[in-house]
Length: 451
Image (cartoon, rainbow, N blue to C red):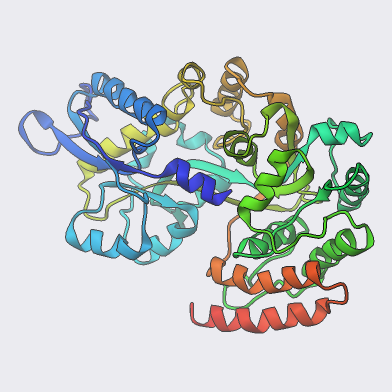
């Protein structure tokens, strides 16, 4: 799923003039006529012509609204690369408005690699309506360093068609792991090749989904200070015990294990997999790349996450620490227009429908149930090209779920927990206590290097 998002969000190089209207608060770079030029990262690449065309059209529309601003769009792939980030900053080639993953934001703030935009961000009218937990990603104390563009959190993706075939109600998906087990057994009983519930256990994806299930049970991957592992807990044990039950007692997970990202996507697309952990964009990936059909799938919250947390992620934009106040103000105008305005930019669902792109997925959810959020939901329904009702259980659960980001050293911790996940799914007599204890020891060494 993260790979899908990364590919969709990959960026490159283009140049389009854009503009800024008259008014007391218009940007002024100190040049002739108050002109200001900003570079903006993560323009869709040429390999994604529909989204790129939409971006360029938005820059042109922005130009009419703000004739004093010139936007230089950058589509370098990937949109942010930790290996070259420092060099771009030092060499003066980092964009004025640069793209960033949620998981990198706090590291960038602590390293003083982004501008403090606190005194300017109030000019963005809808900031007050943004979800506090989403906006909090870009804060350090009372200071603000960026704005969100996208967010998602994990859910349970399920095959509605198989639910019906197995005598289950596709409009009432499982809310507990006991209900998942019962449904998985019925789906697996449909015949050879049918898998009730699928799970990852290789390529760091097993540890990633371990974290998703752990958070939904109320557990944590690391201590509050991020210095020690916290997953060797009753919640962590419950994650593995649940998989052991599904795999060996219920025979509901199939015999093929050590699965990675593409494996479950392909199984879901084939119509033989009943359920998997995943965000709503999984349905889009299955439809686009694995021959699935939107109408066959639904999404609900991760079981037992009500009142607890869900593994989340997303992206947004921050500002070059060398950016002038005029560039910051201009960048905020662009982000407000393109990323935060219902009916415009990324929320221009009328255009997306015209282009044949899917409309109706319940992400990003930047505003919750505030006025802009309700407007965006209404627009999604108005221009929907996918069955919006199939995501209703997921949407209904969101107000009671806290978003929780990946832990520090996430990929290294996921690799450690792949071992525990694969052991439980390939060895019937796997010792869960020992697996978690061994993983904890390795994780603590990894985290010690981070402090």
